[in-house]
Image 1 (cartoon, one colour):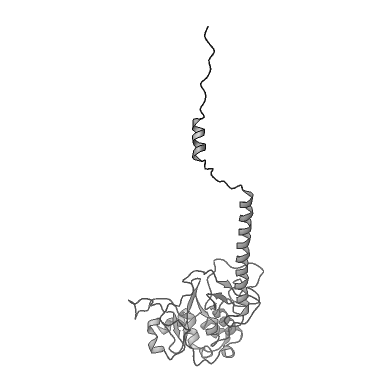
Image 2 (cartoon, one colour; image 1 turned 45 degrees about the horizontal axis):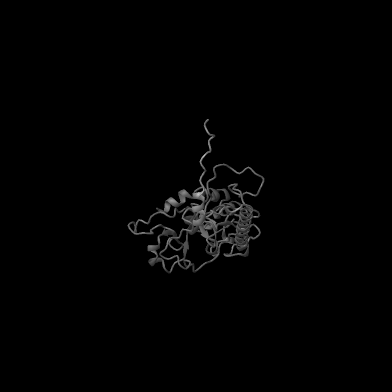
Length: 272
């Protein structure tokens, strides 16, 4: 993908806000512009005939997406692992928090990793309820979150504060998580996994492995255990009420006696 295509795809988020707030693109980091406009999980053209060649790693220093087989030239660069959650691109909060403030962005926990969406997700119909919604796209959220994705928060900051300088962090070193090199970076391969839970609204902290998310998983486990015990008790009570059917086996002697007991011949009255 040519560098010019990123700006065209990201025009609604960058160009419009810069014109509205009369600020230049210098207040918006180039790596963030490319990250939010890039398309991930497409086959790498360089390793087209190689397995696991999906572009699921973003190099912040080169501002390009690469596949696991392209890692060697970028081994000393800052690398961000891109994952998939319900068919959309996400990043681990533990990683993206080293680059930009993610407070008030709703997070999700899947496969023991807390993640946030990079971009908005399309909605079939707008939310019309009275609950909490995203400040930008009106997607339904849990309290007290304000944004459904990182792009929505960036949108809001560019429109209201004219820049992101106060929310960016100077990160000199960003390695890939252990076990990510040379492996597929899908969290759920496009499907919601059984241990995927919505992040608890009681915690605004975005550090990985928070007690709130652990509490949600724990409550789910307890609920499953209680349900299983209830079903077991119900089944045992039903089986106790039923009279068990057991086939009766006769002895050989009893069988022979029953066979010898035949009907006697009918007695007819004498003929006169």
